[in-house]
Image (cartoon, rainbow, N blue to C red; front, side, top):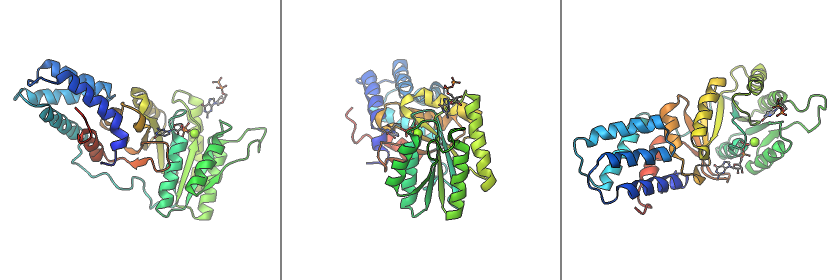
Length: 316
Ligand code: GDP
Ligand code: GDP
Ligand code: MG
């Protein structure tokens, strides 16, 4: 069992079922087979541009030898995707963030419901397990229950949380930037290693809310001039092409340094990860494969492609 097997199970099943349904019994790779591959790739949400790149180079290869087995075809497809993502290039690091920063400050952003708070809980547990002192900042002051939910995660992970009491400043409402400021100040005072800042869900096209992110960033810099060291955009894989769109538009509206792609466990749209890695300049650093505290993996493109194409548990 590879590391990502649970995360890519549905994507893989959907993909191979589609593929085998349309090409079973054929020994010749004709246009209808290539069309079927194209359809299967698009259905896995790899995105049209990435799909076309793959199908084009596949077409070139099979033009030389049109007779092949299903297995040979699948191997070829895996190679093409691997080449496209340069999986034989630089190894993915075991730890994607720069832990020489002390504290390392990570600001987590994204639209509502993608899994920001959950990912923070998982990250807190990950760094705690590595022996790091972790501090969480509850800068999602928009939803009343947000700080409660984050406190539950902080307790689970066994780390400190900075939150402002509801109604502590009735004239203003709790202010996300001041929570972020207090969090990094306290982190420095207490010698924390990792600071994780939760933020409210927002859409890239709300200028006021994007400006709020800038404000959060700026106040943290009063304490730590190069903070935040990471701005982690969280995307929900099950939204498919929407996730892709969000990644593009968020990085246009604000400086995103890395991506976490969640909910891969529940979706057949896992191809979106490949599309994003191929199309965007921003690296995917983590993937979420469940709701539990341990259901976060460091993203490794080589292992990801390997899991997607390992056929031991596939009934074709
Ligand atoms: P936020 O609004 O971005 O903070 O999202 P939350 O962290 O509150 O998560 C929204 C929902 O998505 C919750 O029900 C989470 O349990 C769920 N969730 C988050 N990450 C994952 C994941 O990787 N897999 C699954 N299946 N559910 C997830
Ligand atoms: P409207 O969209 O201007 O009508 O405002 P809303 O009634 O939706 O919300 C009032 C204020 O809350 C807005 O001016 C925003 O500053 C803020 N707000 C609204 N939606 C969100 C959101 O999803 N996230 C955050 N952080 N703030 C929001
Ligand atoms: Mg949240």
